[in-house]
Length: 382
Image (cartoon, one colour):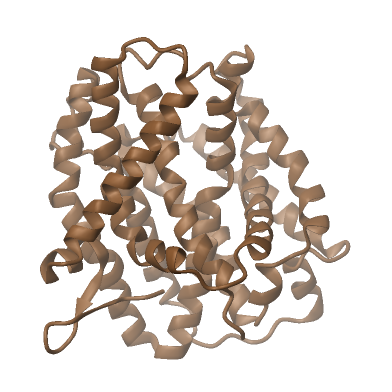
């Protein structure tokens, strides 16, 4: 298979989109009282809802694709050891350091977070994705190394060809309905106050994305799945994305709608969000295939630094929002504030990456970069 350069751009973009997302959610959901104007600004509300719709589904679809590819090429043992280093070491290092720092910053934003995680001074926030990714790695390691090639009906479904696409959409819709129904019936909560429940929900929520990514490799369909024609994906995605945005509590207040919806609509949103997440991801991959079809030094830098930049950004976001609340308690331009702060957080986080990669121990801890013989380092790619 030819190298898909736009997937390099996607790997960096889908993590880095978390920066504007978390800057805004920190200002709205963590800061108390919340930053004036952020929740009511349509540009911020729509951006948050759209980013949240596809970003992590796309990330885990890529994770499944690369996991299947690297495991098949390197073998089960080397692949699993590489994943433990690339994902597990940054997770442990971040929990031991950044999670503690973030806890104190979070309490400074609002005293309601003083309880921490089961009484411990830890704030996981964005770190949940590493735990879920490790769970997917462990789950995937139980499957056979080589899979049989799929028949035409299955391949057509994955490529959204003809009426077979309906089968994939119905399967995703059913999964979303079951997950939403179980979450409501068992009173599961998707928030850090009950972190174990949050992890369970998100593991199940993104399992289809990881699985579809793995299938795309094993069925040798990466060049098709990650570059589907927009005329095929957009018409399918738009209705589900629009429905999810209309029901999304992050978007509704900006359009004068009540944030809470009744249980029946939650079930509908569970269906819409599950389908929208996959279809919108395929749209995003198709757009990137047209915009980033060649190698780029900027993309290469962001790919190598995406892990560290993402790990550090939440700390900087909390610091920036704390300063904003003190220096600019009111502002008529929340969108400008949001964009400026997001840019500054990106720069500060990239600076942290440039610093830690110079030290062998810190590079391993926050970048997953393994030392080589002779003291050099190399990225633990894919």
